[in-house]
Image (cartoon, rainbow, N blue to C red):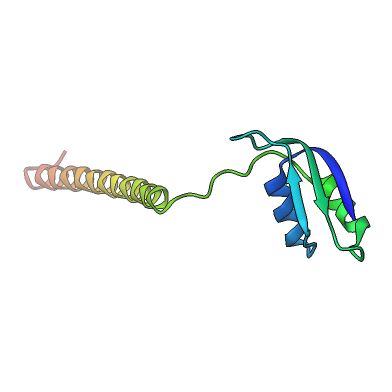
Length: 116
């Protein structure tokens, strides 16, 4: 059984079908090179496929492309940024503790010199 649908992201729709247990026999489309959305897509299914489920998947399909999967470099870069932010926070806390210590030492000196 073959159906034709319009204005879908064929790759994404195929993944959505497979995720829900529908395995198309053949998927064809008229996308141009570099295009993600096809004006026309033809999908061939086994005769015993649950067409109600297929239609539900098509109705729920959002052709918006998924964001690209982050590369290992992207992940490492994000982790590096997070570590740098943690280090900056530690340095700021250390600076504040140092200022508190100096203030306390000055107060002790004042008290030892006759109090104020």
